[in-house]
Length: 175
Ligand SMILES: Cc1cc2nc3c(=O)[nH]c(=O)nc-3n(C[C@H](O)[C@H](O)[C@H](O)COP(=O)(O)O)c2cc1C
Image (cartoon, rainbow, N blue to C red; front, side):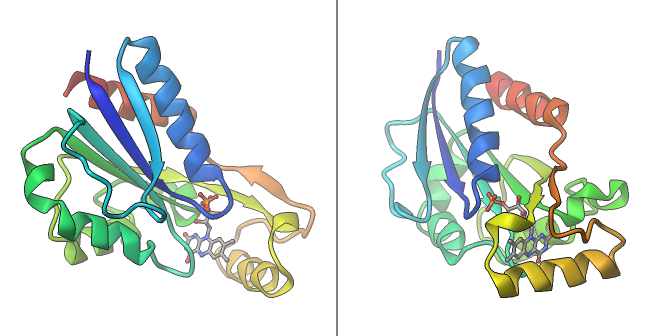
């Protein structure tokens, strides 16, 4: 049995939902799981944990700076443990952009981060226009129009492939 730390960065909750799904799976596999927000605790002590997973959402092309702060501060300790990282964004709804090799935000993360995670995953997120403020809604609808996604302001669509999330969870459990 391992004690696994899952750190998340979320604004609208989809990344947290994915983390909770991973937690549930891992706990069913008899692991102990602690969930924490990397945005609230980028300097969290990782010493008590056997494995570390970080999941971070994209907004306006970026992961939060706290994800990089965490990676910088803990690089050596991270390298000594099994670890994984996943990014959540809507570009990943496109099959040609949904792998660690093809997703632009994963490529950017790996280019910018001193920590090079051992397991990587890319998950498509959710679009729920009613949750967003006026300007965010207009900008995202415009980007969706350009990229042939849903533009109806009533849209609430979850693009997340849960089988893919579970495959990543199994991979982390077996590390
Ligand atoms: C204001 C805003 C900006 C976003 N910018 C991007 C972006 O630049 N690229 C992208 O692929 N997805 C973008 N998204 C989609 C989010 O990554 C997606 O909604 C994800 O599920 C958000 O995760 P969260 O619910 O954990 O915050 C954006 C969403 C919002 C609301």
